[in-house]
Length: 363
Image 1 (spheres, rainbow, N blue to C red):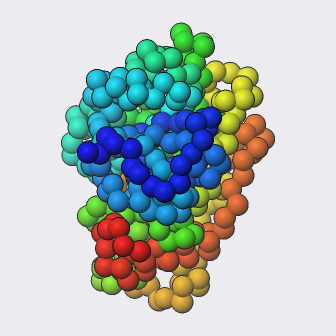
Image 2 (tube, rainbow, N blue to C red; image 1 turned 90 degrees about the vertical axis):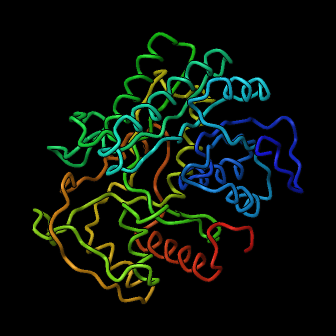
């Protein structure tokens, strides 16, 4: 029964602060669980496993030596949330990752995305209010900026019309959270706008494991290098950038995970002036597709077969973050370099290949 506490050897003291993570077995969620447990938090994970595997729980435990409470539930199911909050009345905050996230699929199946991503947040906020849980961190995205007129993108950059239903759900959910907190001043929330998370935990036990063909650059690079794809397609080399390829702000997933712990502490310590805040999470540096490929080849010694093809519709030419607000207000700064990101992603891909596992328990 997924709803039972997973029994691992290390027991915890009962006075630890308890945080609920939706989507906690996913790529960013699992790394955040690790960071929270390493900082002494107790973690309750809710995930319907639609895009992840419960075996990641064992891998998290191997990294941290700590248990997680795990519930295989859909956050659109309010009764399930009610029961979880009832069983864990000492939860002090929620970090909300659970959402569908494939841009292309969202264009083809908009109602699936609007139902899941928006209903999920509304259900969560209603049940949090009923259970008197005062803090929420929402997993947002730099997609809310579209192609900014001015770079770097700041938190005050205009939120432009979304180019996909996925991006639109992030914008709508930020507005829902803002409106909800405006009339519930005793509650507090933060939206974290991620730029491009890549890399993997240095231990090689957890990382990005997309189902099917990856939409994102880094897993496509590592899967091509390991032989799962014949070549990498680079979409366009005629952009108005130094080498003609699109530029993004790539951030190591461990840096991103640690930012959630810092944001959590800011909420719990009442150190923010407003009860709703927005922060960019990136490195503040833009790297082109070719620069990422060059970093990968340099750190791994693997030559990557790639071919320039036509631009992809809807792709932004270049975007990178101003991280000044997160640096100054939260006291958080990304530590890892692009080389760290590409090498850790490759180590994870090799681990997957060597073990011939799709997230089984064997290490």
